[in-house]
Length: 128
Image (cartoon, rainbow, N blue to C red):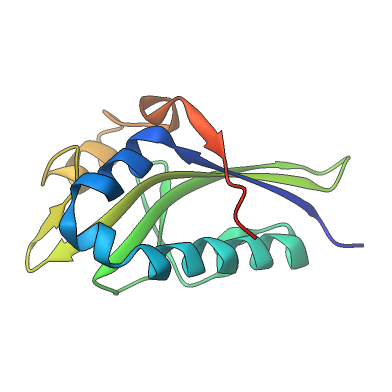
């Protein structure tokens, strides 16, 4: 039986996509990545089975790519339900991240100065 998957995207991430030229120009790429996370979660209930790395409390994928998504997820084993929280869309530019938060995103995530709750509120992902 496939897992039920709910995807929520932070309003901050969506706002950043409208303001940042690099993120905006790659909107379709980010949306495809979200759909791939959703497919991975439907199959095994684990979106993090995709190549990713863990930075602080976030999974960041795809690993080693210039464009990346930071996310977390919750599994409800009893109901075979997974909720994926897309927290941040990022563009890696040389040695720095271009994010609405700061170029020190990795340090902030590792020190847990940013968490999933930092990005509240979330909106349901309703793209098919």
